[in-house]
Amino acid sequence: MTFSPVSDTVLNQFTQIVGEKFVLIASHEDFARHASDETEDLKFFPEVVLKPANAEEIAEIVKLCHQNFIPVTPRGAGTGLSGGALPVHKGVVISTERLNKILEIDERNLQATVEPGVINEAFQMAVQEKGLFYPPDPASKGSCFLGGNLSESSGGPKAVKYGVTKDYVLNIQVVLPTGELIWTGANVLKNATGYNLTQLMIGSEGTLGIITKIVFRLIPFPTKNLLLRVPFYSAEEACAAVSQIFRIGLVPSGLEFMEREAIEWASRYLNIETDLPEGIEAHLLIELDGNDLDVLYKEAETLYELLQNYNIGEILLADNEAQKNELWKLRRNASHAVKHNSVYKEEDTVVPRAELPKLLHGVKEIGRKYGFKSVCYGHAGDGNLHVNIVKADMSDDDWNYKLTDGIKELFELCVKLGGTISGEHGIGLVQKPYIGIALGETQLNLMRGIKNVFDPHGIMNPGKIF
Image (cartoon, rainbow, N blue to C red; front, side):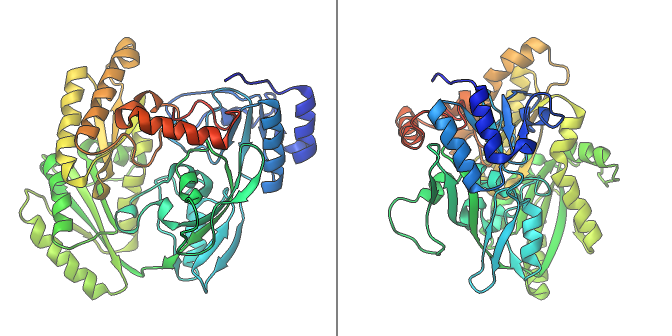
């Protein structure tokens, strides 16, 4: 695909649409941050950054780009981990940061309508004030945008019980790559009218359009929870315990895995003292929630009985909010701690949860084979293990060239175990070379065909996924 640069004429038209204040060029102090996200140390500079105020302005911008063959990269908060918001073909970055309003919380129908630039945690807190719950809670929930969450179908710790972003979206307003503005569905719980365009948009990583409004379904907020920290002397045994918890009839609202090094690094990064006896290889963080504390304590007792079958240390039952918050803070900051310690690559592996022990064992074996060190943690209840490959003592040549063979072998293991190469971070730019491991050519051609129907000039977030 051949793209055109942003001409002075088109730049003037952009300025007329959004106003001079919201057109950023290279000399602007805020321009450079739009060249990167949280993916390693990659940088790709656009020609111009635009900050429209509403869907209609976005539609005008995109129509101009379609007519002039100018690439468009939609951008939320820039917290992505697969390079999905990087303008690899220059062109225009469209920031959604000004579309940041919660438009309506409909308490009668348990729905909410929001703009894509609303921060996940701000939305959760707003609906919680009305006794309602929006469960998807990525690690970056304090900064990530809901539009970006839809683009990647983000998950988080609560996904094990409540599902991921896609399970809460009823309808989306979208600017198509041609500049047309549509709604994908209806604000109803059932909809069997035609193809499901709503779900097609979710997880499409900004390649099919730009999200401008979202209608979410909500559920009642669970008022009680218990949090247990369970130390294991074997990391693989910790993984093995995960599927057994579900087999005895428990469905935790969070079931997180952290191996020893992830705990140590996060503790140092946050300057938090953590009791970590010699020989402990991993922790499971297990949350139970509901509305009846007596029921939760009975579930905790059932859990205690099961865990006695494993070689574990002393279980901690967090008995106050400060202790709970500290434990969650350690888990949510694991990725920041790894990034602070070393150059790294984070691989978002996922397998059926009963296969987690084999996955963890395989990760370490592959690391020994290719000479890399890994720090692992993740959403064990979903079988979603984040494998952080740290550079440490690897040579630049091994890191830049040999490592790709190790990552390829890691993804082949995931697929062999019945999993795939991304659970919640998406494919974007950095996983693109590996997508053929998980998907065959027939599947990929179907996806390319869908992309071509939506985006005949190929301008929308080009260079991603395929």
